[in-house]
Image (cartoon, rainbow, N blue to C red):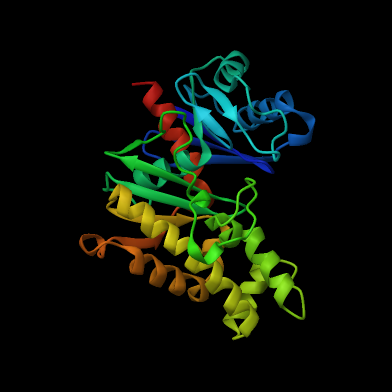
Length: 300
């Protein structure tokens, strides 16, 4: 039986799964990502996670935070969440440590591949996957394959300008982007500014919105509309079969989903009004499974 490992490297945790050719996850291992200790420590954590799965693997696939050149297996650029990660020869380093073929791509692209293989996008060839969490990233699958762009930067949906974010500073240094008001930290910060009783987490804000609190409802709707506007514009450009939303912010419930869908639909061109916007179904396994799919393709 062919077994591969799928790895999801993020700024805070590294998850690995032992996966067979049918996509069954046979074992899981999650370790903290030692980001502050530098790239060598992050690679070592990934190697350890694979070894702790307990079985030899024929290949390894990786979905990593950052902009990735999949042909070279190199990290092109990364945020401060992974200091020094840019320039890491991730495929080379993992192949040397593990002695098996390795495929590398961005973590959101791996997420999309997982959903297209075994999740909510199964059976669809043209899919837009949007991950809404600490930031807002996306992956566009065209005929089942990731569209990377000329510089591997395709998918930065959070940095699409939208009217409802006008003037709001974004983490990229610009202003008025969807991420500036629609990401998890942006929603929590907006609530903290406007609510008399600050919340400790976005989950708490969501719970208050579900209970009818006006400040929480207002903040969630504001961020959701900004994201919906951005996604509608992206769909007008790319014409996918469906749009999937993953990431922690998608757990906010109907108080977030309803304004998101309303703003999204309002932006669509008439021939696209039937494009469905729905949540992914694989949760935390999505990127691991997508990475495993990359590993299986290496063996073909």
